[in-house]
Amino acid sequence: MSDTVTIVVRQRVKPGREAEYEAWLKRMTEGASAKFPGYIGVGFHRPAQPGDTYRQMFRFDSVEQLEEFERSDYRAEMLAEGARLFEADPTFERMTGLEFWFDPPKGTKVPQPSPHRMAVVMIAVVFTMILILSTIVSALTPNWPQPVRLLLTVTTQVCLMTYLVMPKLTPLIAGFVYPRSRTV
View (cartoon, one colour):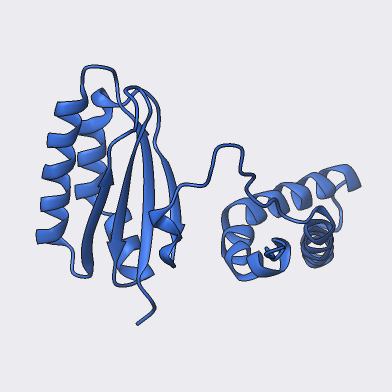
């Protein structure tokens, strides 16, 4: 089993609905505790000033158990029920260390992926997929006009990258694409 994982949820609540929101959150977390093995608990921070963002830290024994909770009908139903209390869509961030206890100071910049490394990855993926797909499409449709074969190749490539290749590849290459942070 993998290390514990935390998902930090930041949520703006409609003014005047804070008590309802906190009651809703309590019901949701009590239900999660009863229904989901591996659920460790939730930390909760009220905003420093009215109108600011609430922050919750849901902890699970493993990424797999968190993902089971995230895919659950229970979570979807609770989010739908709570939507009337939200001023905006929540933000979600996964963390595996102790960093979830701390909000960065205002103005802190989140590291951006290296554009050079993203370019290398995209060139490798696009080249490989176009090479394979154009060979297959050409073999299956030798009498079709070149623009139609190219359209079929590109359409297939974009769909595969969007729904299959990149969602599986992105977590595997994150360490390569994102720069390492250093303490100065």
